[in-house]
Length: 159
Image (cartoon, rainbow, N blue to C red; front, side):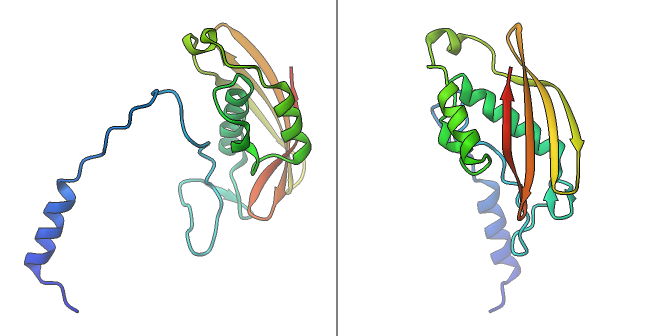
């Protein structure tokens, strides 16, 4: 089947006229943690550098730390972390979740103020991060271990 030039122009015009739909939700709340950095032969993700088939640990850890902080203050559901953390870490995060209050809604979102990565081997990375939320900063220590084509947090310490 051959596509004619006029058909290409019609399709091009239709694509140009598409507009994104407005969604009624808070501009600060996301529906998923954006950690879709897995590398697969059918659908490669070229937006992140890879080391031995694994996502680049600094960018990956920054997103994971932000997600953990948002879960701990009640802005995200804990089940979104299930794929990225071990069962023991998941249970500990679930135990430490603070109920979301109106006070949390009026404050700023948490962000990573500093992040240090130490690759102890090709398959293990240890990271420390400082999370800032408003005027308060908290420390986080993580141990990431390689699991197939992604990192998984196996130990977490929140201070």
